[in-house]
Length: 155
Image (cartoon, rainbow, N blue to C red; front, side):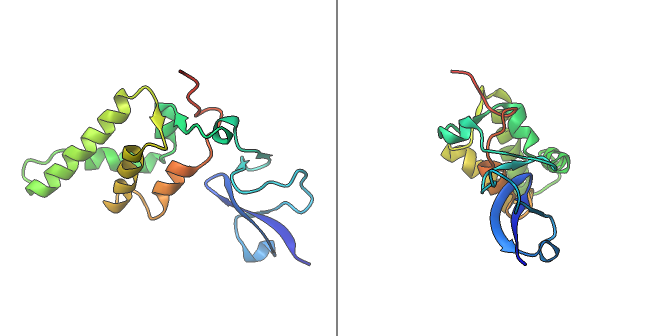
C-alpha cells in the first residue's frame, strides 16, 4: 500500500508524493500526520512547522546572520578562501576574488538581506555559476521559507 511521503530538502518539504518510503531515501511518511504538511513546511527531524508568517506576507527580508547560516560551514570556508587575493594569479582570477570580496562586504554592511532583490539573487546565483556553491544550492538559499530565527523584524 502506498504511503504519503514528504520529500525533505535542507529541512524543508519540497514535495508530497504517494510511494514507498524504501524507494525514497530521506523521505518522511506523513500518512497519519494532521494537518498534513505541504511544500514549504519546515521539518526539524521530528516535527513539521507551517511556513512562517513572514513568508506568507511576501516579505523575504532576513538578518545577515540568517543569510550566512543558510550557507553550510564548508560553503562559507570556500567563499572565504576564494576571496583571497593572489598577486601572482591572472587578472581574471584576481577580479573574481575582488568581486567576491565586494559581495561579502555588501552582506556585512547591510541592515538586512532581501532575498527578493534582483542584485541579491544575481549575486548568489553567480556563486553557483563560479562553482563556489553546488548545483541547485543558490535557489535553496534564496527560496527556502524564512524561519522565525532568520526573519528581519525591523522597519
